[in-house]
Amino acid sequence: MSRELRIHSIPSRAEQIRTVVEIVAILAAGLWALYTFVYEQRIKPLAEAPSFSIAIRVEQNPASGGVVFLTIRKRIENTGNVPIDVAAEALSVYGETIAKRSARKTRRESGTRAEVTSDVPRVPRALLFSIAKLRNGAVGGNPNTAFYVPPHSANEVAYSVAVPARLYPVVLVTRKDYIAKAPIMPKLAVRIVRTARGAYDLQSKDLNGEYDDEDEYPVRPQ
Image (cartoon, rainbow, N blue to C red; front, side):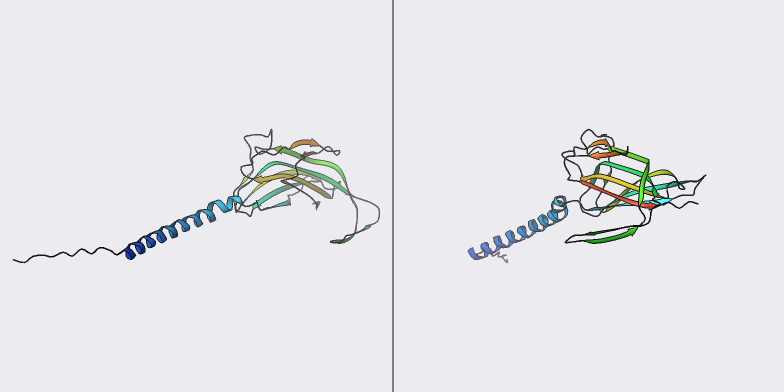
């Protein structure tokens, strides 16, 4: 009759320590990988400052009875890793005339910039369109409206403006936007005001988040 023998070995102290060290190393590597993934994908992007660009594009539609219809598109492209929101916005369009006097020449120089122009003066004559909005991100703004732009995406708004092209061969488009990382907390203290030209504008004591610009566009009579 055969007898089955079983041999039990007891790990040495050194082997036990080595096993514990290996287990701890595996757990540490897993925790570090998890932390790195969460930090890089979640924590780090949320700490970044917003990054975006704003572009105004003016499209001229067919004229009717001497009136040219312009479609003015404001496009905001979020080039960063955090969402952004437009707390308030204002946009105005002025009809400009060409001065009858000869071309003007101006020169501006500083330590960082030099500029010279020799062109025909344009004069803003009439306010053709003006709008201002306080959205959800502004103090006292409409809680039901927002201009939310997720990371790496774009959003735009369009306005239609009628211009008597024979009177105003050039239009001046001014805009002002208050933009911040979404959700905007605390809300931006911005208010709607009227300018000397009768247009609507935005005003705030805090310049953080204010982005404004103005550009001229020719109007082609058809």
